[in-house]
Image (cartoon, rainbow, N blue to C red; front, side, top):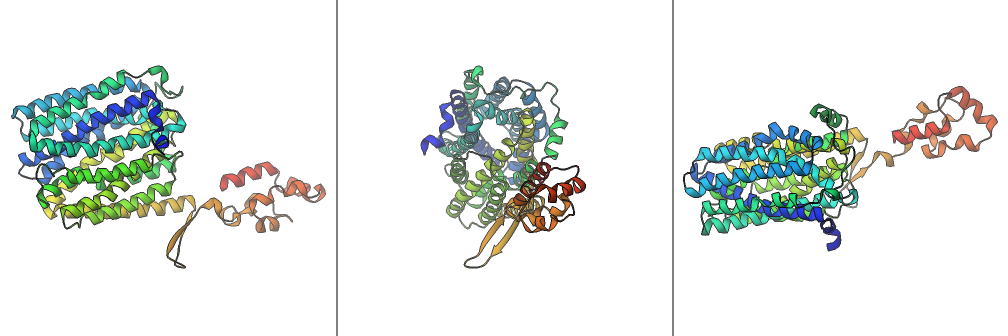
Length: 487
């Protein structure tokens, strides 16, 4: 089991990548937790100020991510990641010095949130597409799952460490420690062996254009559906940095040592969701993504009505599980279904709709929490995600021709029937592909797979003249291709 779960770590370059990301992300989550505490302290516990900070942090993602994806498709991803992480580290060091010196004010936080967001807007799409160069294709699902597990391991450890550090060392030292950890990827990326990267000969296109990537996605329904769904979920449902911080301090009156525990509970479940997908060997189906979205929406709705801190922590564990299971399945479905030469731009679009919409969602969540209470901003977000998931299921059923039926006996259950499993007479009208001759009634009563060989087994005097007069442009083999394509 362990060898299956962690098999991508046998690849040296991926092992360096995962180590650098884990160390950096622990520092980043420490910084974000301390930053939330700092903002609430400087703003007299204002959810709107938290929302503004989050919005400024993710606005560059909205504006620059597609350009970052274009860079990923044109230039060496490893070198781009070294530059982006260096810019992030330098910015974080200056920010930490300001906080530790005691001269920081609220506008400083807003400014550095935006600067760090600029570095992330380039780094994130490049890093997302770089994973496919670290391992061979058969290990890609596992590598993506372990990347998600790394992220959520840091999201568990970071806030927990920050909570202890805030109680013992106060805000300034927490920022300094977090900054030291954030430097790690610079060294791991430079230690990699470029010759061992799995680079496609078509992966780098000097004339890569953003518009071409958008056109590519528009023609691919299997990519468009998860991207559209994650745009809604990312904007409305994934505002936990704003809502959980405000819920902990304002509604449950948490102190520094317990401030990050709600985020930690969410991350514990998220780690389980990431590991649950680590055994995945193939591209996930559409209904895996849609089912996870519906489950996540329901659980987030329940979190909004949690009567106590402990109950909120308990509900956040399964909420975290389905949040990352959804995000990971959507990411896998997009990344494993895209051509290598478009991967950077398509993953940039994924980052754009998933993270780039955060400025809108976090601002709305902060505004709503200020006026109607933080819990209502959580349950309303869950309701929107649930409705979006149901709408996406309806869209998928209409496009694919699949059927969803409810059976009440012997016990209530939903049954999904795929279009290819339905009788051929329902999905491929044979009268359109065969000539209106004596053999048409047979095509209407037998499955498509049995009608194609019929012209080969009957005497030639009965069937060949009909085939010549009725289907001069289509031979038996062509009809077989047509039927298979329609199914």
